[in-house]
Length: 167
Ligand SMILES: Cc1cc2nc3c(=O)[nH]c(=O)nc-3n(C[C@H](O)[C@H](O)[C@H](O)COP(=O)(O)O)c2cc1C
Ligand code: SF4
Image (cartoon, protein in one colour):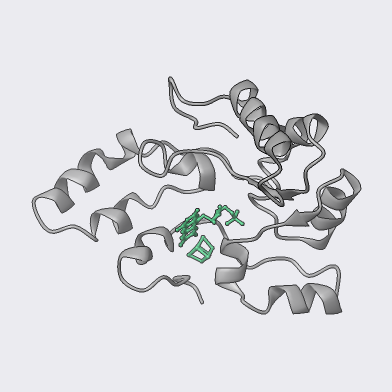
């Protein structure tokens, strides 16, 4: 939806691209994401920036350098449930294509809200990494909440074996 970096795509441009894709008829649905992993990684994830854990994936002297100045480059953004919903609504209003809501979807109430607002699907990342059986537990008890604390320490684990550090 938007890159979160100066000079990157903003919603007006990406909605236009989505309209072209819709008109072309070559996609079944769009999953609405945001940010640039390389240039502004926390823009997609929100929550804590795992600077120390990220630094530890490098050898010295890079490790020390990232530990010292990493927080200057890895900017933090506050986390909230369904944090991309505001932007995603603008795509819902502009398109007929099936849309997938992504970003901080962890609860049944959010899924119901997404369906009520016209999204056909939700996608879940960290909440399922934390608890792979979460969907079954939500199905059994709609008041179930996620144990993911959006610490984002799972992010640097992609360089070894992707896992939740709390699981
Ligand atoms: C450990 C980890 C690895 C990820 N790897 C990828 C990836 O390879 N490609 C991608 O498009 N998104 C990747 N993501 C982003 C997720 O697909 C998702 O967009 C993001 O976690 C936000 O959704 P969530 O709030 O449900 O976690 C990754 C996320 C995590 C936590
Ligand atoms: S390490 Fe675990 S608790 Fe922390 S954000 Fe990742 S999945 Fe959630």
